[in-house]
Length: 103
Length: 115
Length: 197
Image (tube, rainbow over all chains, first blue to last red; front, side, top):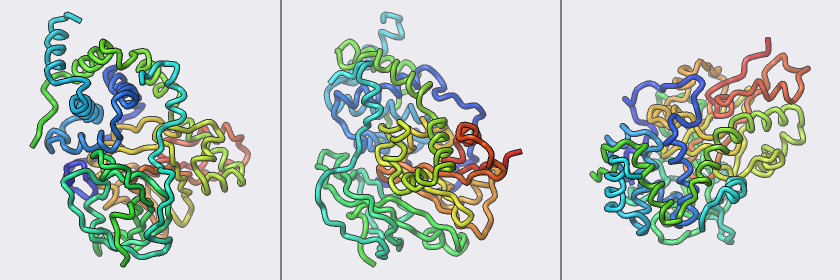
């Protein structure tokens, strides 16, 4: 699809920002999100291509404003929902519980 | 399958190659001049917009791989050859680009026609 | 335009998934710990640096590396996820190779680890294909006009490692000392290695 992910040749995206002594993960949640890739891959039976396509379908502004592992999160949520492993309702319920400190 | 810590090192070291052990005839040979198809699917593709409709040359045949455009949508592997295809910077970006510089993209049989 | 990402904190969203999947017995959080530990401590650009140093001192290895990158890299014990099919690109006086993935962020994990944020960022992915010399200048690198700059867009499942030029003045160094000189950026092709002092 002709999505925002297809960036080659675009102008106006600003300078390339580099970070000295960059850590592998910038926060613990990034490491957990990274680990979820292999862990969900082995049971959920999706392909890398399908995973990439979920990211490509993100809204353009949203894609540019969110970080790499946030893109992954979108893909996990969509793929796991499509395959019936975790529904949006389950996520909303758990989110409310976590916000209240239940878990 | 449940991924346990014991399995992690083996999984990381083995990976999951997209190569397919199928005997599929290549549509192109090294040195062939090709034109990239002007495809605009609303579904998944690994064909970037900036090479569509451009002329290139087959640099290397990498062998047979699953085709992402079908594989992403549960439509099968449709195994086919994937090639390194060379474009001049000027072919892609016009006369302002360097005369000497080139770009190589990895493209599948279904993305190209003979030129 | 579908909008999936909620305003919620990503840390919380990850925790939501991890806790539900754990409760259902679909994932083992200890496996996630092991993956994080592996990519934080065991896999990274020092692996690639060892490959490069060996290629500099061992002409037969260099030849194997350029002919079948996957097998030659595996000789040193590096293989697997996102390095299943490796291609090694040799930088010379005639050709300067550099690597990008314009469509996502493909990168050779076994030899370089996980990619830095700039490699995954929109500005790098957008610009390097159309203006490689401008991007190199931003990284402080000038390639002579007489050298061909070759940009490799990782659009399929091959993964690329650049074999940088061996710096001048390093004749007496051991393989280990040479490996210490090799930078991550030189193996992506956005850096070159300075002559030894």
